[in-house]
Image (tube, rainbow, N blue to C red; front, side):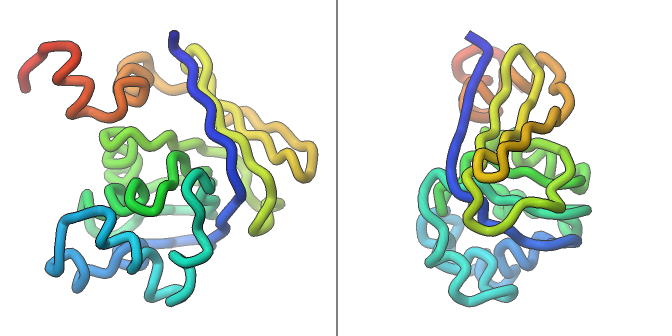
Length: 169
């Protein structure tokens, strides 16, 4: 099986959301526990943002999501709040890789019409990524992921992939 699908409500943020907005650098000194950090998710943008996110919600962003420092904790906190997938117009290269390495499905497509609360579905099937806005009855192709990235996602992230495949770094 090489398919996965996530569906949830859109939680929309804008362009140039850097890793310090996702989780403040001052918080990463407190703990590396993703569940603890979840309460501080996006706090510098909106102190109540984390309280509105439900497990399974899909984060929707504009251009250049995850820019700034390459701190992996900015991907790990997504798992703490229960976000399995992110849809953005574009990602910083390091954030994209950190997200995949942590088992988060990242899709690239036009997000300009998505509103907070829209019903969103993100799926990958044989490498092809599709985003559906069920609320607005729109479907977007979000390109393809390389087979190795799909394997990493299906395994639940790079650490799980390495454990199950028996490979060493």
